[in-house]
Length: 415
Ligand code: SAH
Ligand code: SF4
Image (cartoon, rainbow, N blue to C red; front, top):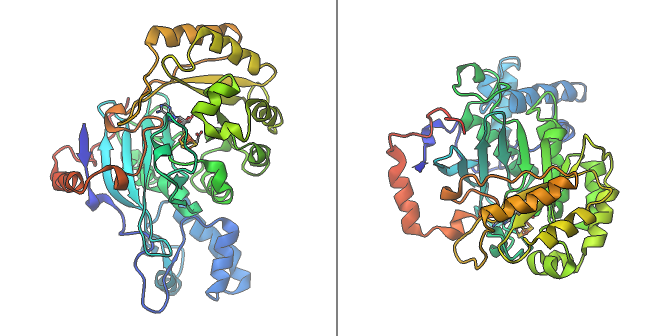
């Protein structure tokens, strides 16, 4: 395992912390096109120009990954100087970067200060495979829900992330992977298709549908074809089953949907996903049936964590396929990832395969998600802000290893 902290490669300092005494600079990351225009109006850019200027900023910010106004050569020097006075382009601060033996990378990112000046942290994970690279991003610090098998669920909700903090995770990952258009030619070991990040999953910390507006804005930014340019077909939002927001998410966010099902009876699911007591399985599946735009080409992914002796019997598998009847669906079986303090165990491998066979025979794709990055607690459900998990002594040890020769600046080695 490689653990590094390589501040030298961060393109700027701390996000939104450089304030001038008179007025804090406005952090631009996370602004939609409409919001950028409004912000420009606020600083006195003439109305006839705001659209054009917003387009320019958009391009530099989200397409080129510019981290300074000096790079924005098609904007006049005077205007750039004005922008630099009032706007902040800096990135989320990387506290640590860990690289798993399987190439998975996990970043602990420090957020800009909240209104009380507290600086919280979230985790973001990059999973390289031969034909794709998936970035798993967080939507909240902690989670209000308390799924009993999930490490994040043991960290109570601290706060929602802003749209900038959600989209900003993608920007940091692009920086670290060297995946901006002008850099990609120099990168090594780029997965097939010429991109490092081909897919985004909202499967990090938090319940995205409890942070609806910010997730919606972040997805709008990430999927814009003239910006970060990851199509909504390649962005998957995972929810534990917040029924009233599911159809709305289809209409207003429009990403792919994943449902954390995990149980085939209300009794089992109540135990694993306590939100089920409020929105039981039948209601959840009805919301799935109503999800707009479903077809065989646009299916819902049902995530099912395999926990030994709890939800992994062949009976469960049979009940599962009955429940899914009529829904364009695929099933993602996730071997339970252990974390410190849990009593659950992962189902045996041959058992998972038998379960998968039943689902497959019923006509549903049922890939088993290979656990990735377990050695650095980067696998599904293992995330938790290190601010809570790590002791100070451990953090100091990490910092001391900054100068490790296996620098994070090394090219990604692939899966
Ligand atoms: N809150 C959202 C998204 C984040 S969790 C949700 O619950 O869907 C992402 C996925 O990881 C969910 O399917 C979740 O159930 C699963 N997960 C949580 N803890 C896990 C663990 N210990 N092992 C395997 N998967 C886990
Ligand atoms: Fe929250 Fe999802 Fe973990 Fe449940 S599984 S506690 S909803 S992050």
